[in-house]
Amino acid sequence: MAVKLFDLGFMSWKDSQLVYHALARLGIEAVVVQRTRDCYVSLGLFNSPQELDLAYLRSRGIPYFRREIGGGIVLLDREQLFYHVVVHRSAEHTPVKTDTFYRKFLSPVIATYRELGLKARYKPANDLVVDGRKISGNGAGLIGDCKVLSGSILFDFNHALMSRVLRLPGETFRARAEELMRERLTTLREQLGEFSPQEVKQALVGNFEELFGELEEASITPEIAREMRRLEKKYLSQEWLNMPGRAARELKIAEGCYLAFASLGEVEIIAERNEGRLRWVRATRRGERMPALEERLLGEEASYEKILNILTESLEYSQDVEEAARAIAGGN
Image 1 (cartoon, rainbow, N blue to C red):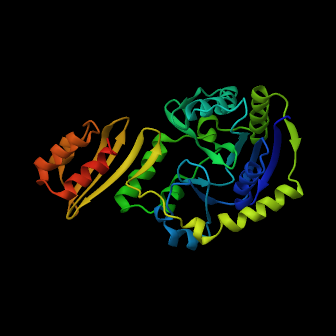
Image 2 (cartoon, one colour; image 1 turned 45 degrees about the vertical axis):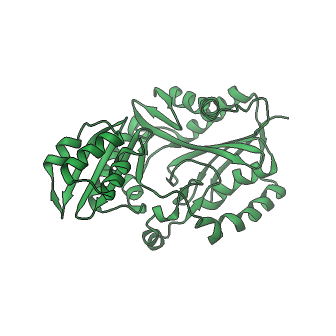
Image 3 (spheres, helix red, strand yellow; image 1 turned 180 degrees about the vertical axis):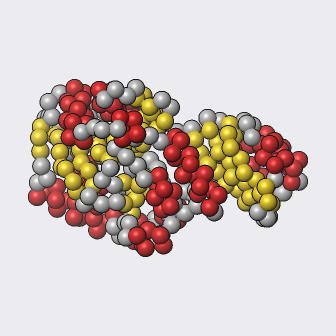
């Protein structure tokens, strides 16, 4: 049986997520391309709503959704083209290893960027980058008996809003987060200026057909619609939305780039961990900069032991210092 193509155009925010969850629950192998009419936030399965500024979201009327697959927190709006791949976990064309799964099913997306003149490449675990800058983030996981890949092609991106919807520890952290997003993320509009969203979609569909063979055009049937409404009750319930996730110790900007925060009473440290080293550091005591500590940390390897030694020598040992070293090093 051929893999189905659902070219769904603009959908409501919740249906743009519910559709691929429903296809997976029904065991329908498919490629879905779509856009959302609304701005919303999507959490990965292991994120916590406590990572969001919920009061700000309510004040702006921005909803949020928790996916049943992995990946991080993403801001989604009309300036993105979503793609979802749903395949049976036991099918011959479905790789078992996660890395191979990403490489295979992101290859049509990479080919699309390259047709547009951009030298996109895959960066494990789940980013696509152009000249070292993230241009697509992706998530994957099991839903029912299907493996699902979900991602988007960024036409444009609202860095300021993304930094604002997150619950971050202070304005210095927020300002650096937005600055890093502008440095490390890029979009089609930034890279190309003018482009045709319709031509981008057509190229993407064509490249998925190169991978799967001819796709069978399909639309949402009454069975799929019923499953979407059934799942809506679960996925929009307070029990599901507020299910505890992992405690956030840092903000992921892109693969290999994280912004971490540590508080030790009067001392606060913000550190950018980039490809295994500390590339930017702000340390303050009661709001005053600590240049000596910043200088010692800047450029250091993101190693728990090395950072712990520096903090212990500068601040004296305590349990808080241990926790701060662990947060800055990212568990390394």
